[in-house]
Image (cartoon, rainbow, N blue to C red; front, side, top):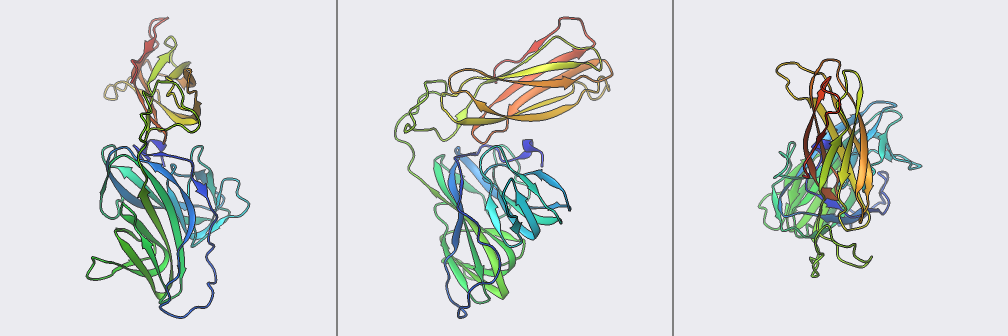
Length: 364
């Protein structure tokens, strides 16, 4: 999936994986027994204020294929086959799930082919929630503790979760489950590969042979009382407060215009945010300035993950290949980081133009 279409407006603290509950034989238990869900990953999500939506979509890896995992605070639930995650010594089998951690994102791979679902949160202000599941919810802009819980249920067994302060996402990895809440007159039936959101105390009961269920629960934490100061201020101590999200100033500087077929180096400049341990996934896009005339055929789309210096400017260089036809090439940059927000205005480079021509973007 193109990183530019990923979750926008969500930044993430380090998510600690606590291990995975492998799908398999569950100890014998009497029907209708209530069993606890197991926490398989947890962390902290930093929301800006706004309206958000869960979404779910299916992905497939062919045998021997690999691809970069989805953005941080995405849940990967395997429904068929097995998936290797990064350098892990064992793959995730069907019926398991995990939470993707911070950048850099691990590589997903499959020796024999696999199918998995990606569960994410989208900010509706910045992106249409395609594949939306459940209802939208409003967030005041405070950090939230995040837990990914999993329950492997025999037919008739149930697990109970508290949705926390926001609607909990319930996804059935395999089997079928009935989900009831305190305010619902009838239970909702959720089948394999289906999801929905629920509020309050949620009871999930396996039917028709059992079910494997994962639930994402978000609970708000107390907002920092101390003023973190401006983003460009001095870095705080290790115990100092961190804002819910960081804004950075970006700009683009492009060397002199190149002749058709030559290259141009585009330098993206990031102003220091004033906080340590910030990473930014910087994207650069180059395309013809005028598609209608067909002038110039420059195309470039790439990204780099960089550690942003908290006190000094960080520079990132991209080498852009110019097209073979003269014309204008528009270059733009943005930050797709889960920690910071920033964008730079477009810079137009004239391919085959006068020697010494250059462009620079105003800070975004």
